[in-house]
Image 1: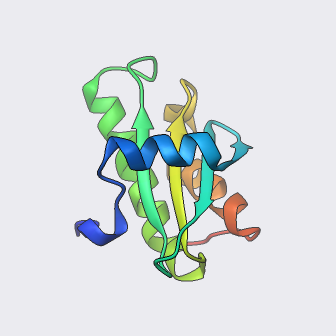
Image 2: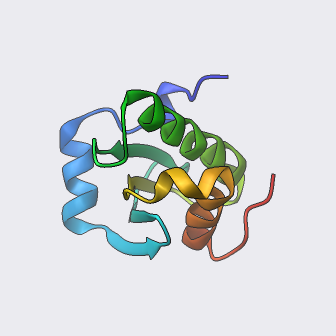
Image 3: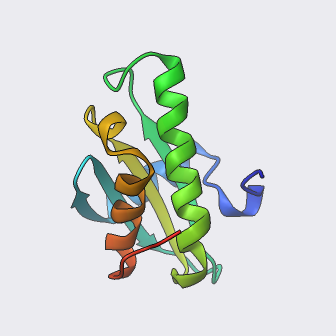
Length: 111
């Protein structure tokens, strides 16, 4: 299942706005930047650098973050989120991504 366009940060300016004015939360293998929006629903942007690994591994980490976001989205307020994966993100699996997004809403996110 795809993450709809309305639920994604697509423009560079949106990423930069969250990075410049958002609140930074360190959550294990991820850094989560959160900035309130006026839309009423959460949106997600993912950054995974080549330090994490080859393309297959980077795409796997992005899939974990998107799945964790799908599970957590109903409990999240209107926020623009940028999730930055650190090099250790490949060892945490889906559970690590769920813990990272759970730290944003202050609750544990379970599948």
